[in-house]
Image (cartoon, rainbow, N blue to C red; front, side, top):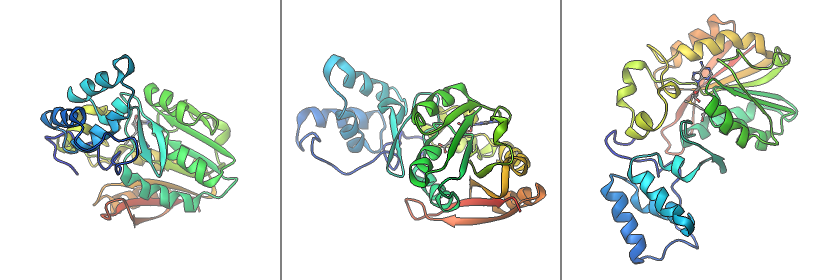
Length: 284
Ligand SMILES: C[S@@+](CC[C@H](N)C(=O)[O-])C[C@H]1O[C@@H](n2cnc3c(N)ncnc32)[C@H](O)[C@@H]1O
């Protein structure tokens, strides 16, 4: 994780190699932009300058974006997009920015979702995971939901033509015709223990709503609610997958077993090779 005292979201979330159309090295306006971003505390100032430099100058759009970033807004919210598994996802202020480490969860999930399956993503944020899985796996039905109407509006953009979205408190609000039919339930829920919220990087702590991170005393409050409901919504043999923090595996497995599911945790590869812990729980 990056320093809590620095803005840091250009990498790994949106960093990329230089490409045609980038400002030429030595371009004074590009150098000036890098200097402004660095002075504002952006750790990956060169990467950010390249991305912001892609915005149109016309009408002051680029300058307005740079000012928002320098004032401390998350880079992805300023740009209006983040990338997950090679797909560009719209992200709007107030909505959780999909993380590159979640590509590990996507890798596990795609092996569990057969073409023609029924995908439900709860706590969907921007709907990034459902969108990527819809493209990769060809499910027959996709539904995503979140408790926050800002997230739902953003997910509707990302899932237009791919699936439906609803406001739901965990599963309370999900269309009831999906009960007992879901073959894959994805739940990348808030899982940071409440007393560790202050340790989050500043981009996450100040740039995203507390509710997107706060998982209660041990970080597992929302996950326990998902697991308790999973048996009712999953088809026989259907699975649920969730990202975990290191050290949460045993408690998450115990919660799944308590809910009548068969569960294990896998350490899946993520973008920096550190591994992301993923809970897989099945309805027998
Ligand atoms: C860590 S973010 C993950 C978002 C998305 N799954 C992703 O990976 O990009 C957690 C999401 O859960 C939502 N959330 C928090 N509590 C919830 C609840 N009780 N019911 C439904 N969604 C909730 C938040 O609004 C947020 O969008």
